[in-house]
Length: 285
Image 1 (tube, rainbow, N blue to C red):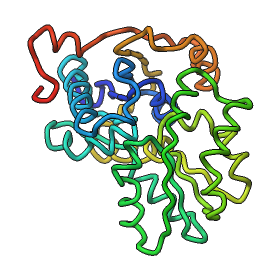
Image 2: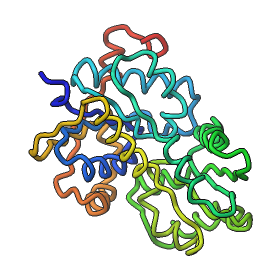
Image 3: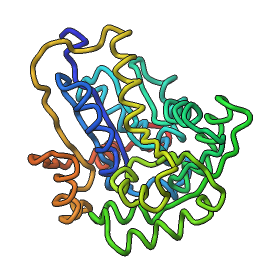
């Protein structure tokens, strides 16, 4: 098979990465997409980075060996910060993360060089965004905040309402006082909350959605690598999770509408159980 005709693999800790999938659907409508959400191990944020790295490695192995994908997007900021450099050395297919392109965008559009980033505990503690921003500008003042409750709200299908607004004000108060003029949504779950976050931050603050920046960079790299599928045929999309029971009905209802995916359905494939049955170990898989 022509490599350009193979599917693209996306992975995330749950349903948050579907915000990245949506951007890729829009930019690359002819590409087949296989999405794997590791709902079994959700959330990745509080876990050790070494643990997250092992999950990411196992999922990419599955996508490459079983699904024969031509490239992988780690559509998860925690997964990108924990594993991107590691897995790029382990696999012979292009693998992309979420962080660098968003950091570049933030530095480019900031007027006062005060940049804030919100994410999971793992992403913020990893310093991945902070390092990427500093690589673009040594003068930038960075404000980083872990916002784990946002992930829980999105997974439950709560994208707006009093609970979301109260949580947002609580998390973002210090960033507002610091007068940051750019806010990076450093978790793929957070774009679901963008209207609320924009309201809380105010009209003078620009929100950077890494999903959009990653999709643009991904299309560019596929084209340069001659992996872009140039057939004018609508691509096929498949959604797989490791534990279907952990997807809330509320998310399916609101998520379908947000993502404009009326036919959003998940299949379950617990690749980690298969590994366990083979006597394998995630740490040396």
